[in-house]
Length: 180
Ligand code: FNR
Image (cartoon, rainbow, N blue to C red; front, side, top):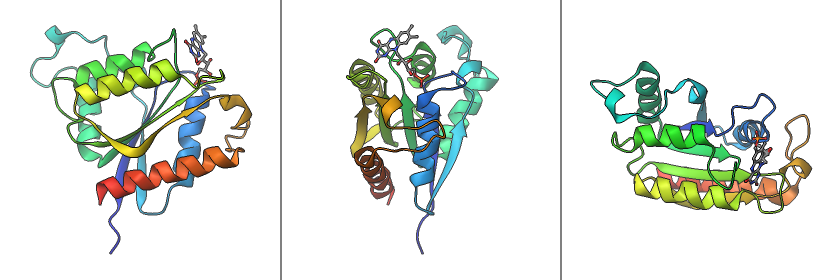
């Protein structure tokens, strides 16, 4: 029997019309039947990271994030770049996870998408540094930078660029391989 893989998908953008959130949903649509996705939607509700608040179970929203990660076999992150770095809300979420260990050995794929020609390269490098620090297992072929996202994802959230679509399918396959 084929194992079902539970993936927690996180977009690093809070924007209603976020290209990264749309991309994340498009990636979910490319997945095989043996992948089940939960979309994490609590990024904007997390308090600013403060170790003083991280006592007992910590704040409820943090507990929820940690428990969704505990439930997941793998994680997919899609994020933009802001100010040459990882969006503050996403870095904030990762800061809450440094000491609690949910990313330890967790198969993880990271996509940065940007309308610029660089594809969010600085955010990409930066988030990988943080994920490595918290011992996430960044899967082989599980990272992708997508420049000119506005030319590759249409207004209906469909990936129109063949190479991008192919790359994302292979990224999902890498995630599956890492979980089996
Ligand atoms: C940006 N954007 C941007 N892009 C980039 O590649 N590097 C950067 O440093 C920045 N910095 C930045 C700062 C500010 C204030 C804004 C408003 C925008 C562009 C940004 O990545 C773009 O708007 C994305 O479309 C945002 O992602 P979502 O919300 O579409 O997923």
